[in-house]
Image (cartoon, rainbow, N blue to C red; front, top):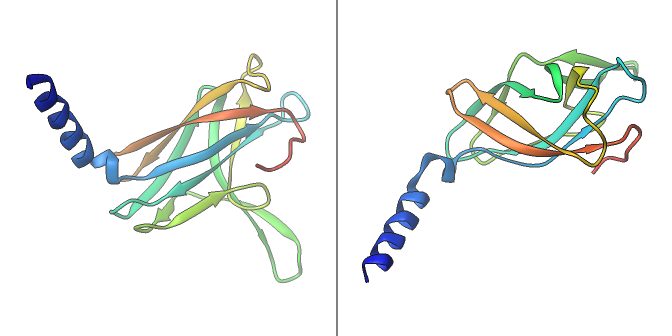
Length: 145
């Protein structure tokens, strides 16, 4: 009986925790660069929680530095990449970081990271919250997932 009460308490507290209603990250993967010394890229999907958040940075042990970027076609049809300082994530929204759109450039890729590995990505929000996703590492030229 005591064990059941303890289990119920843990379940109730877990359901009420801020993380239960917070931002979720899924589908994370990293594409290694085709040429050593060039940047790699990270992709994932963000799912907004019950409170609006603002993504301010992404980091990983797989690279020295990470920058959020967006690829946008201008009026003449030329695609240009611009750095994103932050990204608003409205309540209940979904934002995809995918090839050809929003992505995270990974500069100074660590040489001992190889295709088939799993590497954590840490996302930091203006609120002080963080979210972690485990990214599958893909070889250069891997298709979008």
